[in-house]
Image 1 (tube, chains in turn orange, brown, blue):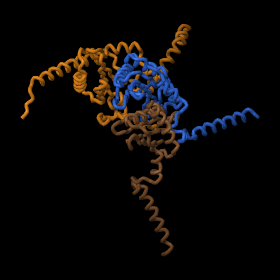
Image 2 (cartoon, each protein chain N blue to C red):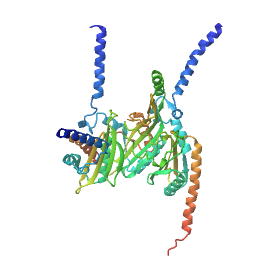
Image 3 (cartoon, rainbow over the protein chains, first blue to last red):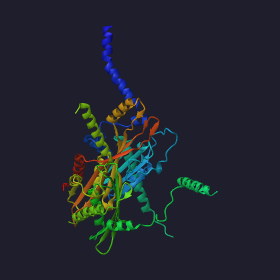
Image 4 (cartoon, rainbow over the protein chains, first blue to last red):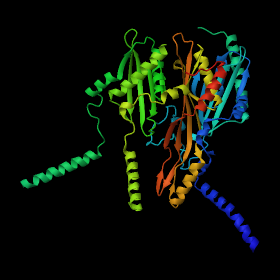
Length: 205
Length: 145
Length: 193
């Protein structure tokens, strides 16, 4: 009997903790709980040096060419193949950026929002009283991809792609590998097209 | 019979008021006409600077706005237009927006005009625009060095 | 003075003070658009000077560094040397969950406090020449973040999501890291002003 009591008193704090945890969880909607929790949200501005180095390797590819224009064209067509809406294109600086919406959040109230009406390009809604969140519950659906092209040396260009998915940086190397594979194919196509157009004489009436 | 007239008038008036409450607000005839005060405001808002290069003037404007803690929203060089906004720190409940235009005037001069808005209302205090141009002068001067 | 009276007077004074605080007008318009005492400090933190005539290289390298920090380029106006990049991340915090839990307990489950859910961390960057012949350029970057709250419930009243707050990021470390990486990327020293 005594042993039983002791066991109970030992288990009590743990039980209380568990109950408190459950209660805390109980306050959350499933949508909320899909958001990563942290002690200080400002920390999100940082990325650890280790993950930066690891990511840089996965996100970059070196191309033995100097023709930036052709490479950019291939990047554009690859991104279009992947359904990205292009938003930034700067040939001189070698920047391409685009987004698309992946319907990851199921609306609870039975209608689908119209994604292409959503424009987040303006700076921000500078308001305390007017509530705006784009299409509510669907900000997580934005997938973004930025690709930059920079010269590595006189003979090579380096392409770097970085993606954001469901409020996180994509850190898995595999999606990038696939992106670069499609890019290489697009580049091959771009080159053969260029050769074809050289081979075919333009017909003038 | 005569004493009944005021009642009728009162009824009519009430009815009119009720109707008014239901009607959407109508634009006044002066909606798109500048008032005399606005015309005066315009002179506070504009200043001519001795700058030849429009690009230099634009970059000076952007630098001055950044010094003042604004976040640049749009910067369009061909149109000579910069828009920026900020919360009136440290008070995050107040919002301030500004539109600056840069236009070549006579040879070697640029006309720079600023319109500032504080919580949806235009700022009409000339002192505020003086402050802005003082900062702008400094940033144009620095960039000329 | 009896102790209770003192307390009462003190309490009233405090309450008055709090009320007064709520009523003061925040910024006098005449002081608007004036440089604040902190602006030289902010300038020094946000600006570095590079001895190069090549503005495009500075911008292109800046874009690459922003990418390194996990940001996505959202706008580029090369003619003005302007770049804006953002990243959207979760803004949930344990502290707020706890607060909500205790508020819920206190209100016997009738109040579900909205908590921060979503944030946009943004950087606005401007590169510009700072001497006549354009051999020196400065790069200025400003970081800020906007936070959106989720929904809540007070009795039967639904609190819709989307309340926002915004703050400038004034942590010098992030500016230092950015410029350290930028100077490495362009092989140039970054001078402070």
